[in-house]
Length: 291
Image (cartoon, one colour):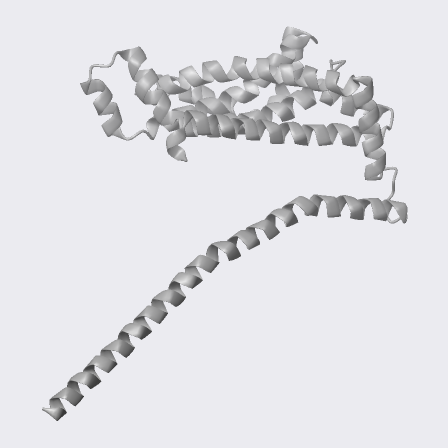
C-alpha cells in the first residue's frame, strides 16, 4: 500500500510539473505575441519618420552644397531661392492661373478620350468580330508617339484650346481602350453565363456584368493615362499657349529664370501625386471588393 501511494504521489508530482511547464510556455508565447504589435508599431513609426524626413534632409543637403559653392546655382538654385520664387508666383496669382489652365485642359481632354475608349473597349471585349475589325487599326496607330502628331493636330485644329484637348484625348484613348478590353476578356465565363441565364438585356449586361468585372483593369488604364495626359499637356503648352504649367516652364527657359522652371517642375510632380491619390480613393469607393 505504501509503495502504491508513493508511486501515485510521484505521478501526481510529475503531472503537476508537466502542466506547469506547459502553462509557462503558453504564458511566454502569449507575452511574445503581445509584444510583437508594439515592436511592429515602433518599427512602422520609424519608417514613417524616415519617409517624412528624407526629403527634408535632401533639401538641407542641397541648400548647403549651394551655399558652399559645391553646386552651380545657375543650374541648381538653392531651395530657399526656389521657395521665394514660388511665394511670389502664388502671391501674384500667376501660378494658380497656370495650374487652372492645365488642369481644365487635362479634364476635358481626358473625358473626350476616356469615355469613347471605355465604351469601345467593352464592346471589343465582348465581341470577337468587333475586336477583329478594330485590332489592326489600334495596333498600327498606338506605336506612333503622340507628341509626333502634335504638329498635325495643331494644323487641323489650330493653336487654340481644341488642339490641346484633342492631343490629350488621343494619348488617353489607347491606354484606356486596351485595359478595358483586357478587363472584359479576363472576366470568368461563369459570370457572363449567369448574366445571360438571368435574361439581362444588352445594356444591363454591359452595366451589371462587363463594366464591374473590368473595373480593376480599367482603373489601371486610367491611372496610366492620367500620367500620360499630364506629360502631353505640358509638351503641348510649350507651343501655342499663353497659360499653363508647360508655358510657365518654357517661358522660364527663354528668360533663364531657373527658379521659376523648378517651381513648374515641382507643381507637375505635386499634381501627379494628387491625381494618383484621388484615383486611388475613387477606386476604393467603386471597387470595394478589392480591399
